[in-house]
Length: 231
Image 1 (cartoon, rainbow, N blue to C red):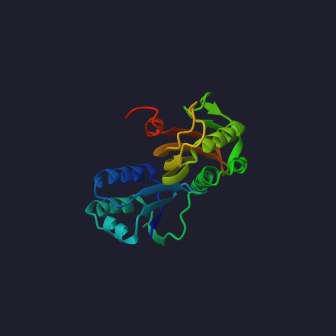
Image 2 (image 1 turned 60 degrees about the horizontal axis):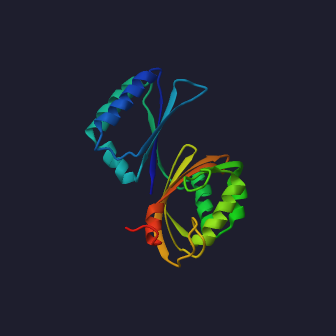
Image 3 (image 1 turned 90 degrees about the horizontal axis):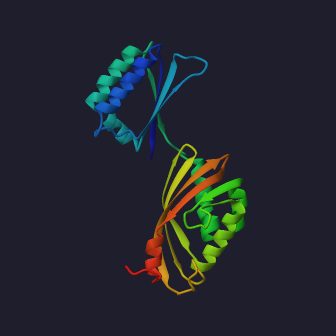
């Protein structure tokens, strides 16, 4: 279970606190178990600072706290604060990257269930899709739906999400897909051959919908499996 530690302190020496945090990051390189750190300052009280540090588990957090570098920097941090910091230890009950949900739904509804009209609710009205395999390279919502209908009629792909990584308004997806060449594809008549290939896509989300996407798939590998290009 993911574990989060909240460090609450008051200081008028913000620059000193930042320097200490930079020193800790450098000193614990290759040793620390912390995976994510956020520092925030209270908008109504500039001396009130909160740091949130994420760990894979409570046990990993304890390993981190026992590092001599952590103890040394902590003592300097206490000296830089107006009063001794307080700690809150939290076991994470829910951890949801909300933009991941809409991207996962896009793959499930559009790619696997062939519900192409689901793009109307999953994407913004001015959605743009970037794909080097498309004739124009960039298409809007209706053109995307039409391209997906044509692609799925030709290849009947089923997609498996391998990894989803979210940061800010962007979600990066690593995926694989399998199918059979059952219809006209890139000017080629159906071969009936099965294939398995991979791809990456990056999505920009806005207001809980997908506003833009960039796609790259292993088309060379696909064409080799269809017998169009020799290995």
